[in-house]
Figure (cartoon, helix red, strand yellow):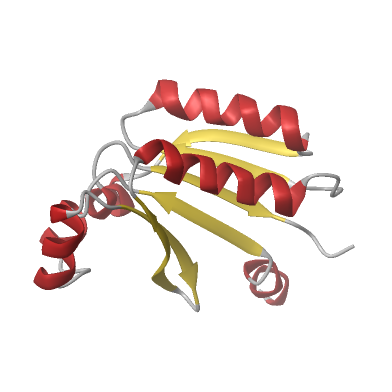
Amino acid sequence: MAHLEAMREQVDVYFVLDTLDYLAKGGRIGHAAHLVGSVHNVKPILTIRDGLASPYSRQRTRARAVTEVKELAIETLKGEKGVNLGVMHTVCLEEAEQLADELRNAIEPEVFMLSEIGPGLGVHLGPNALAVAWYLPPQ
């Protein structure tokens, strides 16, 4: 158990959402935040901090949001040894495969996984969500 708790501190995950609708429907964000984000067509990037979903940044287009997460992963992980990297998606396999190929080529992780996001989380993220997660073991 202690090993798993130590690992948890070394895991980072970033989600690119296509819409705020599902977070609002699930009660994860308020009506005002949903309204403002929807009017401006914001593409949020979320991360997990202290066990809670937290905003990381917002972009005006999906392409910019995906690029930001990709560049963050490359900047953080390039040249590191023992990287475990994953790309997850909700109903956007082709886009996830393209992102996965770009990250694998740039980072060369020791372990790589491409998968769908499960329904328990996917119901809050909605379709076309992308996530990049990594575990960087202590050196």
